[in-house]
Length: 76
Image 1: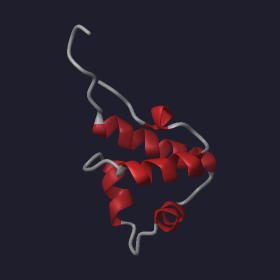
Image 2 (image 1 turned 120 degrees about the vertical axis):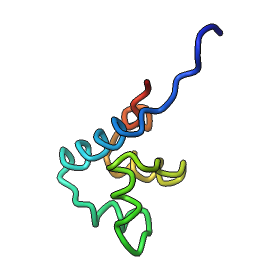
Image 3 (image 1 turned 135 degrees about the vertical axis):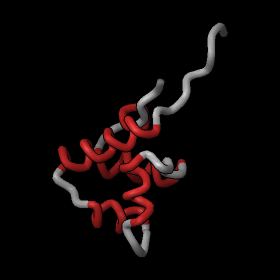
Image 4 (image 1 turned 90 degrees about the horizontal axis):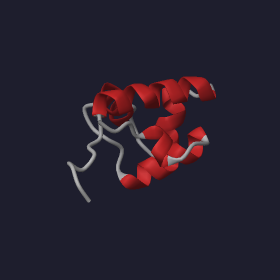
């Protein structure tokens, strides 16, 4: 393998998650409930690109949005 390993563009991934949620007609509270969160703060952190969903939440998110994890993550 040559070259640098790809890295996740967290800001672009957050924007992509936001767009996918909107395109699916879901609300933040739907994602919050699907991931088992008491508050939406974690979801908002994803949308801002402050944090990434854990791998288990990424699997839940992909299922809820009817996409693959690769369709959620934006690489640099």
